[in-house]
Amino acid sequence: MQSLPILLVLVAAVAADKIPDFVVPGQCPAVDKNKLWSEQVPNHANYAGVWYEFALTNNPYQLINKCVRNEYTFDGKQFDVASTGVTADGSLLKRSGQVYANPLGEPHLSIDFENSFAAPYIILDTDYTNFACVYSCISYNFDYHSDFAFIFTRSPSLADKFVKRCEAAFRSINVDTSRFTKTVQGSSCNYDDQKTL
Image (tube, rainbow, N blue to C red; front, side, top):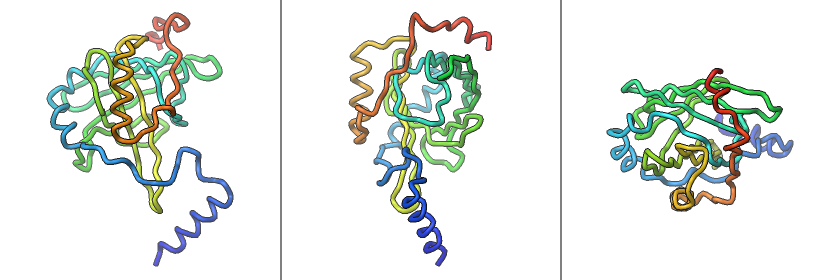
C-alpha cells in the first residue's frame, strides 16, 4: 500500500505547483524502437563527428543556449560527446557526456551528461550526412512524462527539406512541432574559440 503515500505526495506537489513545467500528463508516444535500432546499429560509426543543434524543445538540462556544437567520438561501443557553445549570460561553456547502448537491453541509445541524468536517446530519422532528429522521453508514475526533442545538422544551417523531414518524423509520434525553438547559429558564433575549450 505504498502507492497511497506516493499519490498524496504527487497531489500535494500539484497543489503547491511544484511539478516542473516539462513534466506533463500522459505517456510517452509509441516509437518503433526495434526497427530503428536494427537499421542504426550498423551505422553508428557514421553518426560520429560534429553535429550542430538546429532546434530543440524546452529543455532545462540544456545549459548551452546559442552556437551549440556537439562532437561525437565513437570507439566502436559508445560515443563520447563534447558539447560547446554560449550560455544565456554570454559565457563559453563545454559539457561532456556519453551516448551508449541502453544498459537494460532496450533497443535504443542512452545519453548521460554531467550534472544531468541518463535518458533515452532515440534517433527517429537521420541520413548521417545532413540531419538527425533525436527524441527522448521518460514516463513517470501516475500517467506523467517528460520529453525532449532535437534537430541536429552537420553545418550551422539546414536546408528546409531536411527540417521538413524531421518535422514529419516528430509528427509521426504526435510531437507538436510548434514546441521547437530555433538555436542561434552562424555568423555570430565563433566556433574556433569553442574548439579550444
